Image (cartoon, rainbow, N blue to C red; front, top):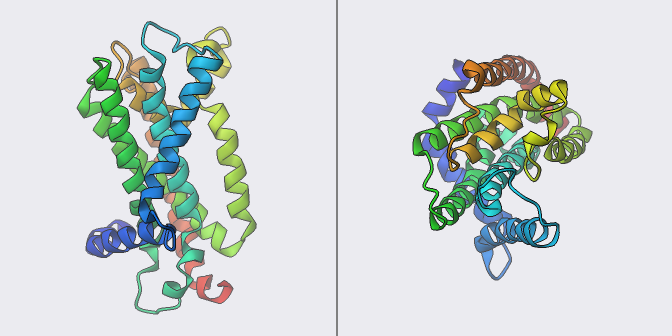
Length: 264
């Protein structure tokens, strides 16, 4: 509860530093912060071209591939960028850590707020494209999944940011793991491909990344809903993982933060 109180107390500071952090990522370039929107947009567009028009990938149903693909990829890009930047945030903000009066607990959340600027842009692009094809989506479910994503990223980065500060190699390990999770998560492939392998199918669905990517995608498709599937089993599993990660990450962070200034 102390951590949540810190976020609420310093919410204005978080948004202000998050906005500044986003601008600083592209400082010194002619287009500045515009690169933050161009890069993920081109990345997503290239995947559409490769998988839809070159590899002839299908959505697995009657829905257009681009409608099936864009929401899931938008959510993945957001999660990936947020986790990587938040995990390395304390090292990036080392000058703040050494200030005794600064609340170190909110530093990963500052990076998350910076990544959220790009995430919101990608979500809007996905929503506009889906609307152009006549898919207007379930707004309430989309908002719920975004809240789930925030809860998961905060819990996960609470742990990884502390470990990455004490052990620099952890940042590289997380980067490798996120690449593995990209292919283990049904971002560019369909879960229905695993239906004949029950154990793999259930295992893939229990991944938090699958819940977020598939849940956001389902918000724009008709007749699919991972949130309430199997009487909400996967929702229970997801929130159980989030709670465990938060408790574990909070314990590690609180125990380690007294050493942050010494190792930076």
